[in-house]
Amino acid sequence: MDKLRNRLYLNMFFGTIGIVLIGVGALKYQVVMDDFEGHIIAYTGFLFTTGYINYLEKKLE
Image 1 (cartoon, rainbow, N blue to C red):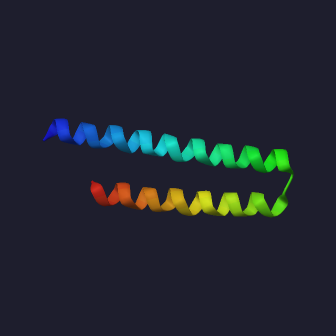
Image 2: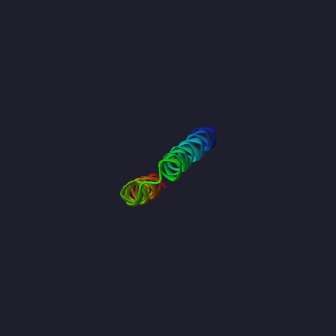
């Protein structure tokens, strides 16, 4: 059981890092393109996604 839980936490860690990298990449693209509406969409989508992931992580514990 402990081994399974450690594996779950490891997968959650890498999933969170993946979402952060996608968000950083999207924001960097918006900075290069200098698009204000794109900034708002990227921030909003990133906040919604991280909120949902946090909800799922709390549900697993």
